[in-house]
Image 1 (cartoon, rainbow over the protein chains, first blue to last red):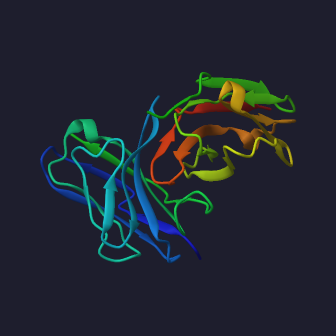
Image 2: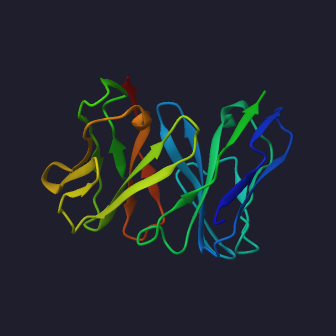
Length: 114
Length: 114
């Protein structure tokens, strides 16, 4: 089944404790992206990747890192999480740039930083 | 800078009523893309439609229809004969021509009451 998977789905952590949210897609998609969803703000793009070893900042990259060493994986790294990073995070992928191709979203990861 | 406004935070209708969700966007690009996504209570994001800036033809898909008006920078979404299953948060989104940066609106929560 074609899908985007994220792990963990739920995470509660403390300020300053490094964490990684994994994202994997099995559709051989080139484009992958991370978003955070906050009430009243919709989804905001954190980082995106056009292909392996090609990543770029979205609208709200501060406090996050990403890597794209393999085509299927696009982990989101919070080196020193802070409470303002409490949010619902979505990973997405599409075959190429998400213009001609539909963007598929993962199920979301709800992160709470205390 | 690109911006998407969804002025309606929440809408409630009774089943079988028609409802229109408004989306107004701002961009300096001449080529851009507009999207609508649905987020049902289960949380996943479902792609509904993509429209490029050169295609102002309105589209109908079953009970869904979209009205794209470049003159007013609007891309409104109408659900005809609404059903309880239409209850969800609906997001309008805007992408530049390169499909790299996505900007989402804050969303409209639609509740369809039986």
